[in-house]
Amino acid sequence: MNTLAPKKEIVRLRLALIVGALLLCCFVWADIVLLPTKLHALYLYNRFTYQLPIIVAIIAFSFTRYFYANRFLILTLLMVLLTYTNYWLIYQLWERSEFIFPYEGTILYAFYCVFALGINYRLAILASTVNAFGFVGLMVIAPVYGERVFISAAFVTGSLFICAYAKYRLDYAISLLASTNKKLATLSRVDPLTNLLNRRALMQSGEKLLSLAHRESLHIAVIMLDLDDFKQYNDSFGHQQGDDAIVAQADIMREVFQRETDILGRYGGEEFMIVVSGLDSESVGHRCKQIKQSWQSREMKHANGATHDWVTCSIGAVVLSPAKQLSLDELVTKADGALYKAKHAGKNTFEVVTLS
Image (cartoon, rainbow, N blue to C red; front, side, top):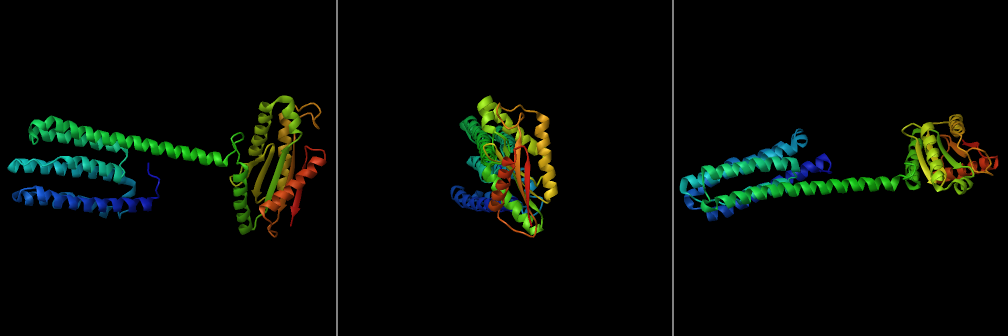
């Protein structure tokens, strides 16, 4: 799994290909020392007519707009082409002078393409299968390694599939880590009971919306909601039903505030907060009324001794006009003050304050 941005990933792959080409040149120097002089021309022809130009061609192709979308297929093809040109060299050196050229390059190409260039495990399995069949075919037509032909074939085939399996395990681990990080990021922002934003994320998102409202000269409103006599309800019916009441409040908020820009969160305990832009006092008051009506329609029986027979909530809202600027903390304080007034006005009501 690749998490880098396209441009950075292309640069990374390009550098890895250049490093691969340089390593190939280093191996050329080392192989020349091992090879008899009469085979130098054949060897150099293979490396500089086939292998190196293939890598250079892919580096050049990496500058086109088609490379990123097809990078895994291209790099898989690179792995197969490099391996088969190496098979062809092994065959030619054997045919010409029965020189036994080592097969380790087959394994090096596989590991470099899979791990340094990042071929995914599915394509790694495909390329390993193609390369394994190629090596077995080479051993059939040219028993280069004599009595060691079977062990050599087993070693190459086993190494190729160990490479593919290791890539599978690595991709799985990275995928699991990414999934875990995503869940942790969600948990750090979302209240697990209501699936609304938690207080920290609520304030962060509210600050962003407030800044946007200031730039766009929009009304901004902060609405505080608190379940009435919630402690009595919790003590009478238990924490499970208390949680059900809190979830019901979250559901009602989602029913009333459905715009993508509306920010809904659990401020703490049975207290909730909403931050909205582009709504004047009349619109905010209308939505507060909808919340009251939604609770009324649910008819969730309250505890004995509660102010009302059914579960209700009190709402305090502050609406800031585009002409005035306050911080989010200041708006929360004023909305909290409006909520306090609604509580003392008999609960199950709302108070909207306009700042212009």
